[in-house]
Amino acid sequence: MNRSRVGLIVLLGVLAVLPAILSDFWLFIAIEILAFALYALSFNLLMGYGGMLSFGHAAFFGVGAYAGALFAKHASFSSAGSFLLVMPVAAMAAGLLAVLIGYFSVRRSGIYFAMLTFAFQMLLYTVALKATGLTGGDDGMTGLRAPGALSSPAGYYYFAALWVLPSMYAIYRLVRSPFGLTLKAMRNNALRVQYVGVNVRNHQLIVFVVAGAFAGLAGALFAFSSGNVFPGWLNWTASATPIVMAVLGGVQSFGGPALGAAVYVLLEVTISGSTEYWPLVMGLIILLLVLVMPKGLVGLFQRSRD
Image (cartoon, rainbow, N blue to C red; front, side, top):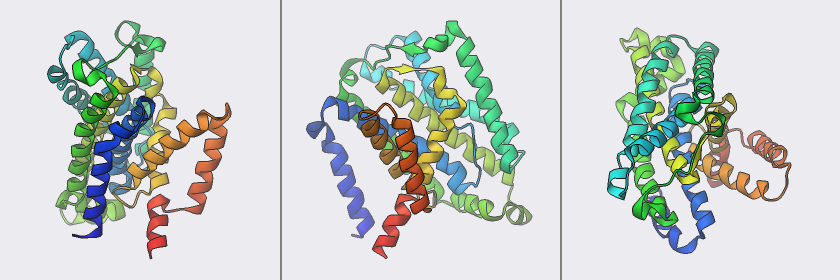
């Protein structure tokens, strides 16, 4: 059994016993890490593997959260079994939105692609802010809770893990498939890949939709953990979060963004409880980490092992 497989088994074992050793507060932090790890991995599908820097990825995170909240509110689920439908609906809503945004965005590349995704996100932010009757406007949607056994921290933690871990595995299989290898080739030289007969735009649109759907799933999982969703989740500043997580962990490795998400969330929780100037302190720490580790935390571990 190789070292990677042993490490994976140990990690799964640790995740399985966390509810027995963590308080409710830290269990909610663990759920947040799971959701943001999936969010960061979905973003890295675009940037790390597809070479597409999106400034609007938070649009799918926020839309997934709102879609899940609205569906649960109007369906009035009373059992944990029926609540299972919420997450596929959230992912589907974000995926369908990604089809629309991606159709126009992938026709451009580089900074033009980034600015198009940014523009679409700001349109959605405005809708979420002004559609008071649907989204609650600036007050957002509050009081979100999963029903039945999922209402407890431990129950929802296992629920989130059962969605996040298979999703991570699906992303892992995708990036190591022929489709994923084509994405890497497109990242390095899209024009050369097009010359050999690959439809570059179709591949970019497919990965854009997949990344959007997983981001929507992450948003819905986080919404029912935090108990609310606000228009700020769709604001332009929110799209910096997956970028920072991916760069912090390392965009050149599969697990790097997930590690970056865990470190980011833990830093935020620890520092925000110590000083009111926590954004400044956190910004300085992340800046230092990125300067010292240009390949992210995973790159530092690999260098230490070598």
